[in-house]
Structures are given as structure tokens and as C-alpha cells.
Image (cartoon, rainbow, N blue to C red; front, side, top):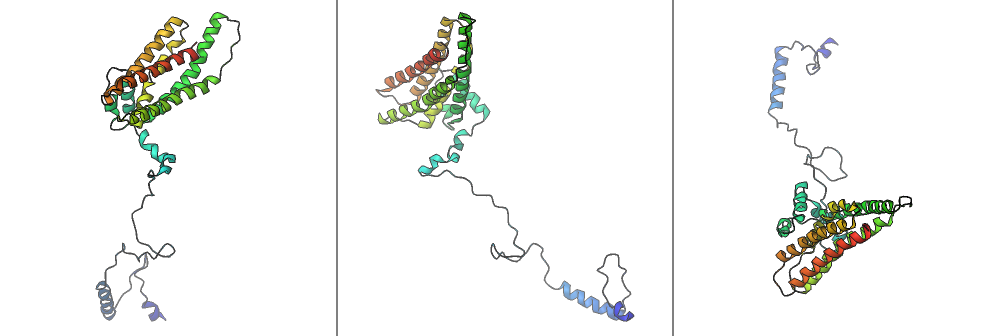
Length: 276
């Protein structure tokens, strides 16, 4: 019984004391170890090949693959895909601020050269949304100040319709007018880019945002001077940049006159309706 237990290999057990091995046993053990060492070396990085999604067991190690990227479709369905418009909102804050400052200097006429590499729609959406909020809120404040100045006892009610009117006016103007100029210029044979036109008209409305604050002054003559100056600056910004962008043609003067006039009409409408 003792001899049978003494032949057990216990060297692999943790904390075990190696048994005394005779010379004959030591020789046989060395032969066994040598045969094992001469065999193929084990490689822990080699696993059985992957047999499919339903197979079990070990599988090969592979680098994680990313999910399929959402690419805009080339057909008409791409127009209804949000990812198709993501590239037009990929602008930094410094770029947007630079374009906003350019809209305040209408005589430069180099706006298209600044947006040529990356025209954006972020400015149009942000400026129009901010202008809608400013017109609806400060327009009600202006009517309140005028009413309290004429009759302090008269009741005053916040007009919610200012929001609907401002949203329809600003977004409708910033979207429809560039589309009309795009098709008109294409019909006349001049080069036109709808995305760049949207970007131009969107940034041209920025001047009206800081202008609405001094329009709260209850002096009618001063209000007209302020809104006409703002409308003239916005009109010059659109007209001069269109002139530098389009080729010389016989109809260019008419196009510039129409663009200038529409901007002035918008500024007058803002004054008459929101700051009476």
C-alpha cells in the first residue's frame, strides 16, 4: 500500500514536498520530460478556426469591427435622411463668429470666398431661430411700452401670434428667396449654388438681432433711422456679395436691385409689424 502511494506524482501540487526519487525513477522521468520538450511548442494565440455563428468553443481573436457608417444615399431618399445634412452643420465656433463678423461689414464683398470650402446651414438655422425669439419677445415689449406711454391705465395682453408671424416670415424669407434666386439665375444662364445662397441670406439676417434692442426706444423717428440703417447694411451685404460671385451679365443689375429691394422690404415689415 505504501509503495503504490509513493509512485504518485505530487510535484505539481502547491505546497507539496518533492518525494525522494531513486536513480532508476529519475532516469525514466528525465526521458519523459525530454520527449515532452521535443514536441511542438504550445502557442496560446492559436485557436481552432471559427466554424460559423452557431459553433461553440474557442474562436479566433479578431479586432473589433465598427458598425456600418450611415452614408447619405445618392437617390431621392437621401433628402429625407438626417445624415445627409450633417456635413452642413460641421462648423466650429470660430468659423461661425468669423462669418457673423463678415455680415456686419457689408462692403467687403468676400463672403463667398470665406464659405467656399465649407458652406454651412448652421448659421441660417441658428440666426433665424434667434431672430424669431427676439422679434416675438421684444415686439411685445415695444407694444407694452407704447401703450403704457399713451395710456398707463389701459390693459395690455401678450400677443402670442407674434411667434407664429415671426417664424413664418423669417424662415419663409430665408428659405424661399434663395430658392427663387437660384432658379432665376440658372434660367438666365448664370452660375448659382443653392447651398451658398442659403448661407448668404441666412447670415444677412444677423444684423437684425442686435438692432431689435434699440428699437425698444419709444421714439418713432429714431426707430425708423435704426431699422433703415440695419436694412441698408443687410441689403448691401447681399447685393455686393452677389455681384462678386456672379459673372458679368446684362441681367446682373436687375438681380442686384431685386435682392437689395427685398432686404429693405423685410426690414420695413419688421418695423411696421413688430415695433409699431
